[in-house]
Image 1 (cartoon, helix red, strand yellow):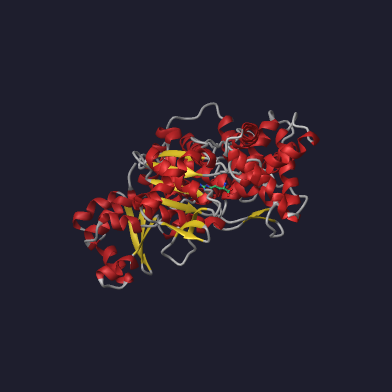
Image 2 (image 1 turned 90 degrees about the vertical axis):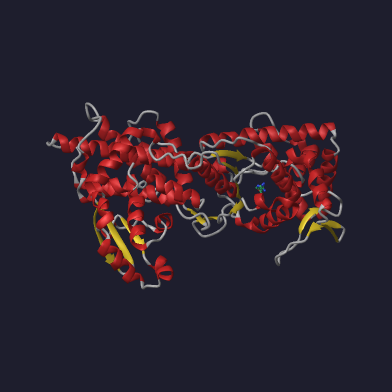
Length: 571
Ligand code: ARG
């Protein structure tokens, strides 16, 4: 594929004598293509060239097609100056042909790249706490992490997805203690997870009113740590039941992990953490506990409690050492709510002090906002609304089924379609805006087939497929120049920026960049479809439009799959 950006960067570089790679990094794609296909913000060079941006833009423009730059006229039609920007318009015919040929020949590999080859990235996501409901709070970690997994994979990285389960400590021991006391009162035969969760909730309620009640869980934890046979058996069973329940949700979300090494996995790997910290004289006694002091103005990182037990942070350090040894990662991302920012600052700094600065620098906490209901309340805080992910997905699937039944009563496999639509709607809502923003959970928005939603994108894809189904055959190639009208060109331009969009989303660890892109593409396709007849008298024009329809649909489908959303073929 022709790298227009690079061609333009080289041309500008020859005129300004500034490194072409640097220039390429600055070149932007304007939102509105009336402002050009590419724009170069000249203020980026103002300091280096000691000139006003507007002047720089004028100078570049005046020599753009001159002398040794003459070749650029094969690719660029014109350049003009607006403010401090040089706006560049490519030769549409050349561009359209290039993008369409590439998309048609690459098929489902279109947009894929190899820039990540040879690099390993660890993504720590989902990571629910065993024996607690798979809460809406873990939705975001799962959805964003799952999408980043797919996006990095698409760029050729070796990705290791880790579900760092919260399968150790007081949480699970509250359930164990409750189970020991009340097991006869519950039915574990049909949906054991419900009974386990009910026990957890009941235990916590009592402990809230009577703090001494905590002792039961403390005792259970002591026994678990000592390897008590009965307690270990219950613990294992609880993990098994919980994982079975999570698996259903992960399957719905097309979410996989390469490792389920949770906190318990590191039980026999703690001594090394303590020893390395001691060897480096980093452990300081503080009120009976052992801590590592931090440089910045943040509280010390606790490693051992006053009872001598390890904690969450100790386990995260053990996990990091393990990941360094086993994966030698180039990046390690943690998809965890922003509430844990301090925790990650502490463990990354501790790791650095332990002598692993190089690796500490490759670690990054990727935070995200809360999930709020339509009244702006934290989801799940009000009684009555669904709070487990399973309930939420079920509700969404049911609601989708109703809508589909109204819209298209004769559709085959309605339940399967409703599953894709219902689940896709929840996922898209989570990824629609930049992750750090709080997410609003409003059913009317989420399932609005005409809004900026998952169902809208799925519906656009389905429409492209139904256009193709109505034809006797889909051509292999066409005269793509015939797509050179305003609406057609806009669709091509978006298709052409698919690969760059995925790269940008990974650079910023921000799947919403892909979500916004897909909305733009779907809207552009709808405008094209409303303005022009795909099926028309001129067969050459028809062939070109049919292939544009096909590629637009393919990219929407592929883009959605990178978000973890499946597309039905009909809906
Ligand atoms: N289980 C933790 C929680 O729910 C999240 C774990 C995140 N990953 C990690 N390596 N700390 O709060």
